[in-house]
Image 1 (cartoon, rainbow, N blue to C red):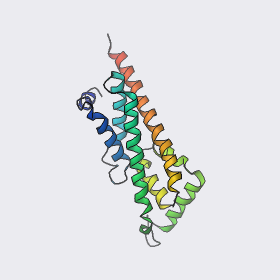
Image 2: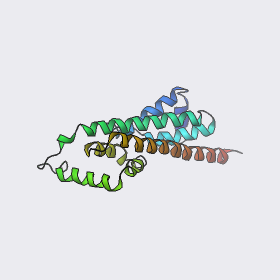
Image 3: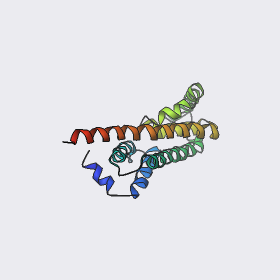
Length: 170
């Protein structure tokens, strides 16, 4: 981990933007496989413990990145209902109905929880959009989930950054 910290630290103030864009990419359904957002957020938390970045400012960049990425995925899902048909195996109308029932049963909590589960982070907003979830309701749950994600993962990184600082001290 110590070899990765100087790399992110070298970005200086641009590090906020790098972290925000990587988190956006991880939350976006089209680029989620290529963006290591969660690992970068934890590393950024460790750098805030070292004093390289401000914790509050980093929370804003991480929260905005993940919220906007999920919102973009939701909008992609809103326009993709015609992808489902009875003849398709995975993208079947019955799977869409199952997703709709799941969201009706658990509602916005799934959007909050999905922020913390890597594979579901970009998928659940798409399913919510395809299921016809109300945009304002999605936005509220996305805001709660993205903010919680930012504070908690940066906090984990901050904790480990502080613990590593104590462990490497003489």
